[in-house]
Image (cartoon, rainbow, N blue to C red):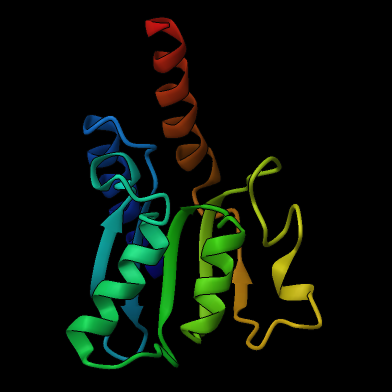
Length: 153
């Protein structure tokens, strides 16, 4: 299954984030026609001192820069965690075709949980959404990260 292949790469990226003491979330932008990963990223908010440096926004920016375009019509985004409101809006503005995510986020998610951004009448573009891909693995890396953080306190 291709979705699992891309999510495995997202998990590798999330592990890199964890090793850099960043919240372990990874994302890739995929060209569904070729199957090529166009860009990839993981959270860098701490290192870049930038609250917007989430995996999704960085992957979108990098894909747009690489391709020389400002919208990613027809492209897919894979991410290990249900996007927050900011990232859901960025995904919409980038015109991502399909959003695939791993773990659901009842506290900070904004796609299936929370504000349900894509259900808003002011949302300009609604991607297809497929959640729960490798949900247990995606959730576990986050649980382990925060468990270790609490031990250090």
